Amino acid sequence: MRFNYKNLLYAICSLLIFLLTVTFKSIPTGQLWKGYSMLYVPAAIDDFLVKQALSESEITEYASLYDQYLPVNLSANSAEISMLKINAQNKDFEYSTKRNAYFYDKSKTYRVYYIPAAYKAKISRTIEILNAKKIECGADANSVYPWILPVIFILFALFLTFNSYNPIVFSLAAFPLELYILCNPFYPVAVASCLCLLFVFYISNIWRRKGAVSCLINRKIIFIMILCAIVCAFACSVKSGMLFILTLAGIYTTLKFLYQTENYFENKKSFIPVFIRPAKMVSVYAEKPKKILPMTCSAAALLMLFFVLTSSDSLNTHFSSVQLPAARGAKSENLPGLNDYYDWLWNVKSYPYRSLNSSSEKKDFIEFPRYIEDGNKITKTKDVMAYNQTFKTNAWNDIDKLKFESIEKVMKNQGKDFSAGYASSNSYTMGFFSIIMMITSFFILLFICISIIITKSKRR
Image (cartoon, rainbow, N blue to C red; front, side, top):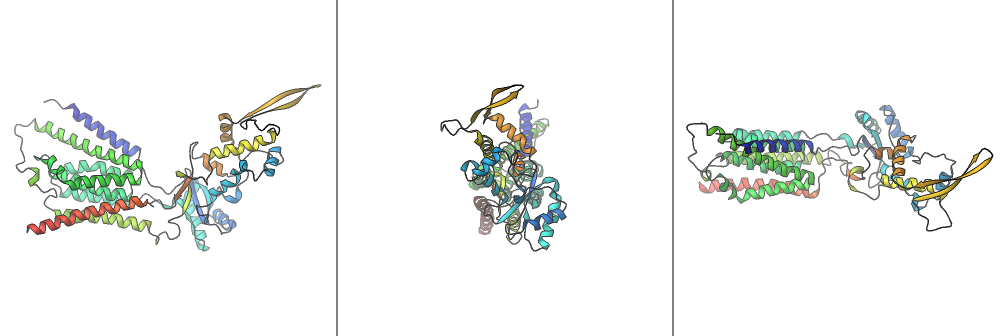
């Protein structure tokens, strides 16, 4: 019998899905700015004390509020700077004051310092020094990968593997879920994935039995389990939701590959054994519902417990809800971006040369005469200034020439299209809907567990 080439397609699809899951992984991190960590202290604390602690920790480079100057390479005595001082309250120049918002949290309770990633390992020393002075502070990079989450999930998968009628089938079909959790270690998703893992356990126990598909379809609770898991994944983020859909597809292609492979080798045998009992006569819990279901609920409860502990105010009393400026999330109008900087820079450079006689003159194009002494005669020429892409490119390049650690350098490091918003200093602060879906997933497992135990008791 020739090998079924559709099987090769299933294998390729499975490998492609695994590759996409790893490539587009969504790892939670406490770092809110690419290339920078953030130290935050109460706004009332003297800046000198913070800088002293940074110096003692051997951190010599950082962007701070009191070290910001006008982000433009012009002489202090130039016409442009003079005009800027005269028009300081003009709306065209508000960027120079609005940029200060980057150095405070959303409520302006804390002051923020931006420290290059090269000094990340030394921030903990700074925090120790400040804490010793009774100054409560924090850093966005304190959070680490939540290893406990995938460990609990994989241990639970191993438990089900050893209790399955078909451990090979279960372990292979469960692999996409395990990979997904490793690449998306979020507690609500992990709790919901326990539902899908239980579904895979069902499949493994009635594998290749007559009426297996109809047996699963007739269990309406399965649709609720999968739907809840999908909604929970999307509640965390659209990216997590899309990857979860891919994971379900990966489970399907893995099972199809395994099914076709078994068929290929069985057809080479002279005798093919057949299961006598159909799927509806076999326990999807491998005759161990009182062992499987309580363990499933325990795994989900343990995940929820660690979520509560890592998000608890008792562990992060003052900073669990601090909203810091971040180069991700929804854009905030309080935080100006690079385009606002370009607008401001154009106004600074063009204001002294704008005509006062014409209100209709375009503000994005300035043309003015210049006179050059050429030997014994004076030659008239003209200069043209235009607010265009070339101007923005030059402004982008000139940021690196600023002679201080400017917030513009921090923004530039995020890329040209970044938009700033606010994000929690606690990496594992989930949305309210995500938490609701996590609790819902747990109660679905609890409902299944109680229902099976009651049904078994009635039969006796």
